[in-house]
Amino acid sequence: YEVIFPGNVTDAKDPPQWILNVTNDGWFGLSSGPYQHFASARLRAVEEGLPLVRAANTGISAVVDPYGRVIASLGLGREGIIDNPLPQALSGGTVYSRFGDVILLGLLLLGVTATWRSRKKT
Image (tube, rainbow, N blue to C red; front, side, top):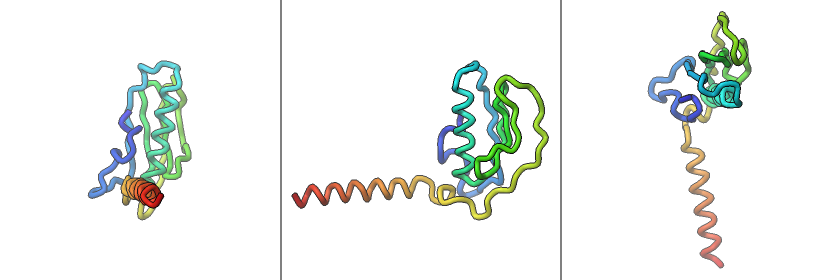
């Protein structure tokens, strides 16, 4: 489930070429949990610009490219093997992989400052 947390997937000082997500979604059963975890995993691939391989004991297992497209997969509750070449990472990464939450924090600070200044004038 660790893949659901943005910014905790890779190391900026030593960036990987791909993401491996090994997970136990068995305790979710046939609920929406495995689908939500898989959607989060795809989002991590996009935000980091890296291909992702997800191996889940009860599915959903998949190979995802850096754009979040599912290249190969096994559905929920399916057993099998995925034998697929690993897609290439995006060259240069993404804005998020380089700067992380700094941009969001900067926008938040800008918004707070603008609000404070507009209230100070009135």
